[in-house]
Length: 271
Image 1 (spheres, rainbow, N blue to C red):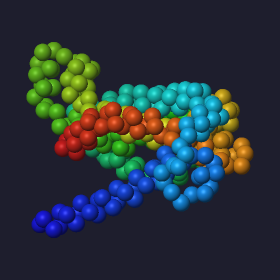
Image 2: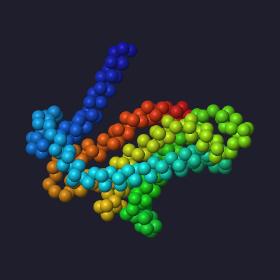
Image 3: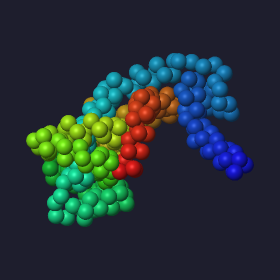
Image 4: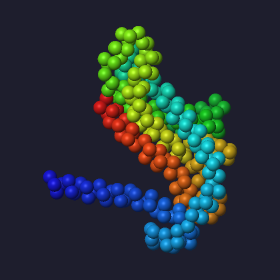
């Protein structure tokens, strides 16, 4: 048993090193000169410099692109939490015809590749007149998170004792009051988990954004990175610096909320 545990730790350690190594190269390249990056061969910079990060910050128009990414990500997270928390409450607590079938229909959408919906979404948005706007990004992002969000939040709400709802109803509370005062506070870790799971892919989304947005003033950070790559002969140290700038907010968000994230997943699974 002890040998098996040691072997398991060894495998996980090797996997962790392989997974982290590209990220370390990105951090290393972000503080190297262009010549040192092209020379390659060593992870630790010989002459580390912050000039690459400063130059890249200015070229990337970070403040403008950051604001656009923040708007799209924030509205998406807000839409997901509002819409699907209500839907999940209905699936978990309320009784209505077809509840079970509708729930599993939502869950089954997890197995539909998102890329297959790209063309229909673009055509629909063009007909609605929202193609090329931030709203045209937010609505598909909200819709795309439906399966996983409904699955996790429904599980979290089901884990809350029914006696609490019955006691609230006995005191005269209506469903809206019960949802707001009982279920939302008790399932806060699950909502934070959903917020993180929604924010990270939305922040990093490229495909739909590239197809939809043509106005540089509406570019998000991934498109800003693309302009940095395609505007000149690629300077790989600046590309890695831009990638580091883009990914740091996501890492900070996860580290800040990781305790709630883990608890939210455990609560949803138990439910």
